[in-house]
Amino acid sequence: MSDTSSADVSVYRAAAVGILDFPPASRQSPSRRPQLRMSGPFGGDFRLPIRVTREIPGRELLDPAHHGERLLVEGQLEWTVSPDQAPSTPTLIASVVRPVTPEDEDGCDIHMCGEITGPARIGRHPLRSGVALAQVTVRVQIPRTRPGSRAILTETVRIPAVIPLNHPGTPALLRPGNRVVIEGLLEQASLPRSGPEVEQELARLEETAKQRAARAMTSEEARAAERDHARQRWEATHTVVHRVVAGYVELLNGAPATIREARELRRAAMQRRAQRQQAS
Image (spheres, helix red, strand yellow):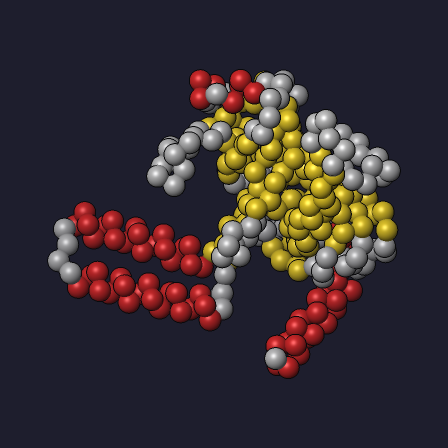
């Protein structure tokens, strides 16, 4: 990762290295948009969609003829939230595409500056149970400009980020309101879900499975039904999230906090939330 100057507080950019891939065309997505297949910093493969909004250097490399080639794509991540309030998902808006060099490593490097919006959650990484993490949300202001125009439109996005508890930059992320510069890597993680809504969905799935089992099916149909049931149970009990794993943090404004303080801040926030719910 390259150095980031603390004076450049508006920094927001990404550089992704991976294998060019094109998903099969479907009724929902008739156009085959390019993706980069890569791994996260703690493992786990995922695909990052690529979008081109204008003529850029190397655009021709995103053609299906180059499927399977390793490429580097620079640009900015665009985070979208679905109407059902599912976790936001990123798309890389490309500004430059080029072949990789021997020094380029797979993954998506993120450089951003923003403000911590709430108390940190402490947990374990789903793929590395020995890695304890602090989970935060970073509010980032992203300026949008157009060539030949003086118009500037600023978009506010909330980007999830995590950092190992033993990292020297962790204290800077543990206090809400801190303004920080972060350099890290994008990852996709599957997090467990629980609660009354999940229990209701599991009960519905079990009832559906019983009704299917009561019908006459061939052995092949029965195996397909079991696979479908297992997939639906997994989807009901897990949430797939994209987030930035911070590897460098610079505190611009605010004060660091200890892990104990972070737990107290979160406990106080949960108590205030419970009180508001009771009052309503």
